[in-house]
Length: 128
Image 1 (tube, rainbow, N blue to C red):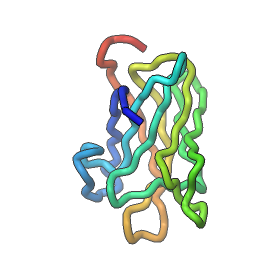
Image 2: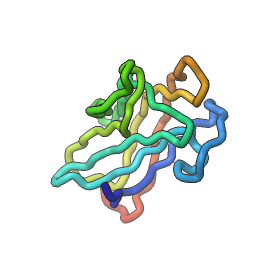
Image 3: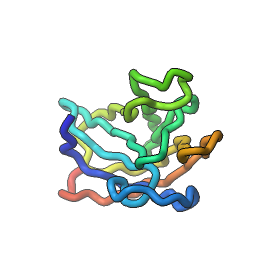
Image 4: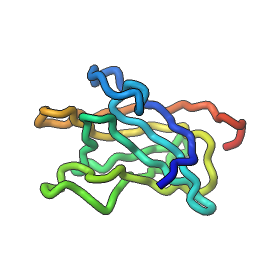
């Protein structure tokens, strides 16, 4: 699928691992893609990282709405997403404000870390 949206980088310095430039050196990133009249938020992990599926990632907006990320394919033990999880948000977004809660695991770690990140992004084109 072609990503036509904006990539939003999450500052997850607490995780302290190096990762690929694909995610700006961070273990997780969100990108926004158009989905009809809505927007698709795609949560991706840097190489060597996995997104935990037992605690579904969620984005709580500044307005108090909560959007859960999910995917059709999980690993055989159902512990991790086998493909990037998505959340569908009504309306066409150019920015996201809110709090993301997710669990991320670095390669070789047996326990995921719960990550809480405050998202404050600026719009590229001034629209919301």
